[in-house]
Image (tube, rainbow, N blue to C red):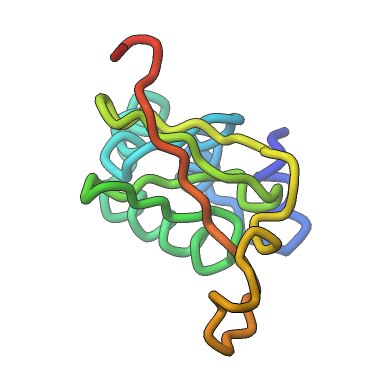
Length: 136
């Protein structure tokens, strides 16, 4: 059983066959699929799954905080199932591939007090950009 499915079951989330397929499609360390990509992969496993069911399930997973929406450079939103483990993203400026990265250090510490303008900063999202090996 995947970590995501295990966390959802522990929360009492009702696992239907359609929801299970969506969660199984999302399972993995570097999975950042669009909703349409999730639907195509889910339909290979469960032909009768509708696009609306996929979108509704993704929205529910985001609302639960179990999946994060990732938007980069005006491209389609992608869904990241690694919401439980803090990480940043490495994005290819060419093809849009996204990888999870875990740099050392605290990104909040990199923002000096003089640049916080009185904000109480709770979190930081850092995106590293470059070209993947295929696009170089």
